[in-house]
Length: 247
Image (cartoon, rainbow, N blue to C red; front, side):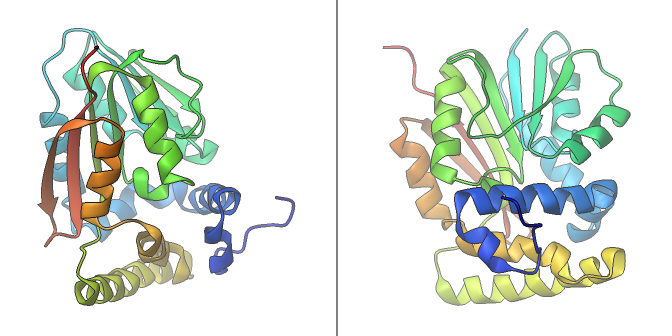
């Protein structure tokens, strides 16, 4: 798209190309403060949830891991520690976020790449583990992202995703949306003088399927053994599932 992205304009979120460009513009703005704000928004619990994601993964000697929407690298680095003989690829749409990750990097078995989670360019069936923190909700097209996860995972491979989660109950959705909007707006004002910066979380969650629908979308692609854990009064969910075995 040729015109600059207006982060206050919700219309950018209404199409696949528009959401992709919106994400690029947003994370270019927040990259330098992203690590701080994730801790602030979660009241310091973000790292504990990511440790639970890593702990939910299987014991494997030399896995190939793909961390989607890798951002500043938290999960990629944790994967590298968990699997020191493995190879970890951190993929993200934002060069600015990856710049921060590369500065933080001190492990040899992590490689960061610029790319779209719906079009990774990675060989089919070549990945043992796919992860993501705050990834699926930011997919420009969730269906395409789930299809790509199914394509790159080897038979029997594992996936684990941590993200904000939407309940089915509409009344609770309204309350959740209001709280996230207020909390995100506070930190947007404090850090960027623009309340809308982190109000994006609530906006993106409005477009995201509720928990039950998301689980069904995952199962529709043949994934099995789906497990769910919720945190932060149900606002966050960790979903772990497995690719079907080879026929």
